Length: 236
Image (cartoon, rainbow, N blue to C red; front, side, top):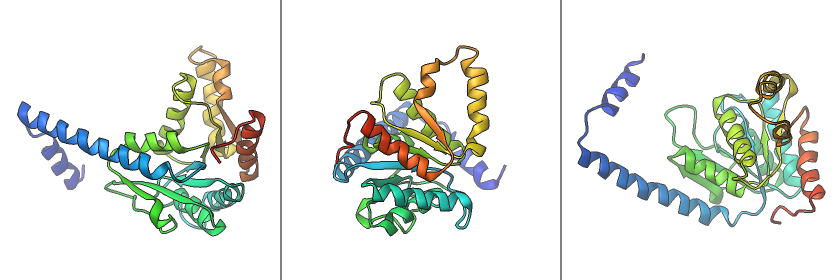
């Protein structure tokens, strides 16, 4: 364990009085409320957007970086803005694609101790900062007209499965969720089918909540087709 991690654990687990705990929780409530109010106020003005997720560790020049940039460019030309987590990697590439296309480029950045700082392609008036993951997730789900999920790690999977779960349980209005990259996500979907579905942990209809495609053109088409099929307009 690193020395910094050890010191942080010692500080975090120092004994606290009940009064200290209550005071900390009460103050946290106000910070949470402030993030929600700010998010609702700012994001209600941006119009229809698609959220793009993927690894913060993807470097410029990588195939996934190019995919994200092209995807965002094409979605922007379809009239959508782009929302990302605001950081580097796939997020940066998506914001860059939206910026180049002249569309809305939104970043929901979160304060982390590593690998997260706002990328330079977010519109200055559309950068929001968050301390809490759950308030940030709320903004993604409330103000996105679709999710496109590129290769990523635990954080990417967290966003993906939370949205799938909320749609599955009818706590979130259905919107298109498109995963891009069969070679990356194929093994996961094979396991979902062979274990979760076969053992009755999910229903076959649950597999219709999301789609797996291999190209950005397919992903853009799925988003467009969703709104045409159901004769919906994504809040244009």
